[in-house]
Length: 62
Image 1 (cartoon, rainbow, N blue to C red):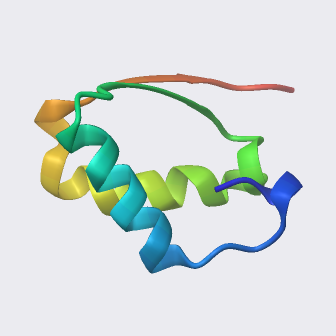
Image 2 (image 1 turned 90 degrees about the vertical axis):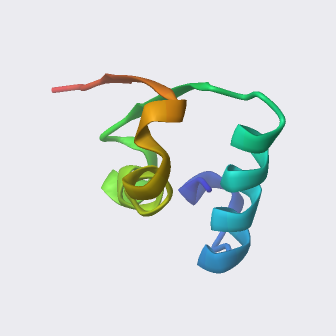
């Protein structure tokens, strides 16, 4: 889920994120610089169905 670890399977990442919510991981921190925005796009695919279950913290860099 980060450009620093190489490419990852999107569907597998979505499964991991959904499982994280299922087991109580509900505070997520992200930023536009993580994966050049790819991380936020990935999170949006999970959160569009489960947004009310997660606290989302974001930041930006310039």
